[in-house]
Image (cartoon, rainbow, N blue to C red; front, side, top):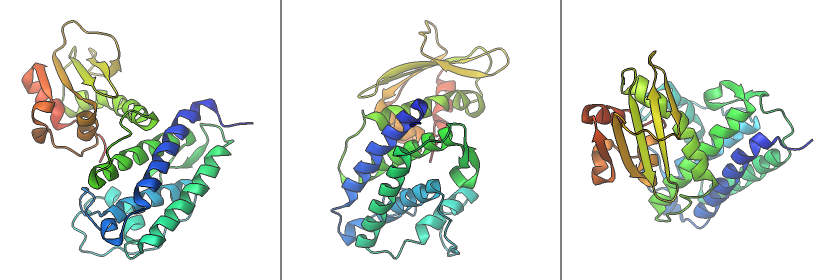
Length: 274
């Protein structure tokens, strides 16, 4: 029995992003490890610690027994507190300790994924310790690792990987969350049609349709008279959707045609990951 075909895209996306992160951080000096990552309260080291911690949990390792300091201003939610444990426990690690643990963890995780024989619907530990399916766990890990690869590329001045397996995987994950942005976030009324037109290395056009009961769905069919059309490039799209860019800072990178009030509401609720 081999790895189930439905898991292969997530594994491929994870592998390329994980290897890229290891390559990006391997030559860093101690000072570069400690520079701000662009995420609130986290250095580059903290960001990599988060990746290591996520993979350790996916491997089934026990979580560290660790008490957080009370003065971490960026830890405001239970989700943030959960994630911070894996980060704070590594804050005093040296750069060789970080690269060594990252390499060892990725070797273990890569071996696990290559030998994965479980059914995609098998129950495993997922984000925040909640139980989920193996399919969803792998999907979330591949998405998370690609997003943090991009975080590192921006802070280190090493752009790239905006058109590989990880980018296409991230597109699919973000598009699945788009109907909720339009209905639950922006509060679009029934019969609303929102078109998202994205150009760049990953280009696509998708339509969110709100039915008579207020439920949203997304598809690739062209709409001739949308309520609003949001046009942008792929890099801006993923930065907005991942909470890395505020809508007001996007400037001319985002264009709205049609119902401006609804378009602005969609943008205000565009971030579905952080």
